[in-house]
Amino acid sequence: MNSHYTIVIQWSDEDQCFVVSLPEWGDLCHTHGDTYEEAFKNAQEVLELLIESSLEEGTPLPKPNTFGQSFQVA
Picture 1 (tube, rainbow, N blue to C red):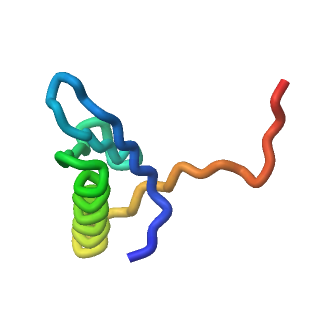
Picture 2: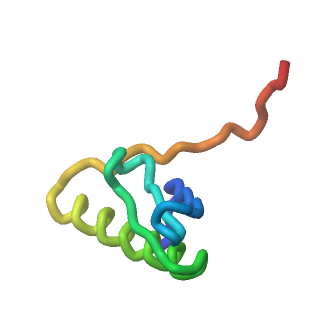
């Protein structure tokens, strides 16, 4: 499934794993993985489930965070 949602992957010293956030889906939407690749794969699976569930329930999908084609730096 091709989507344009944000996936943030960060190392957690406290948890000793890569922690993943899916910010468009809320503050509590997280997953993790022992490797970066595993964390990314888990994020993709969670994202697919979130999209499928929303579509089945008729809930609107959150708007993806996007960057414009151009931006100014002051």
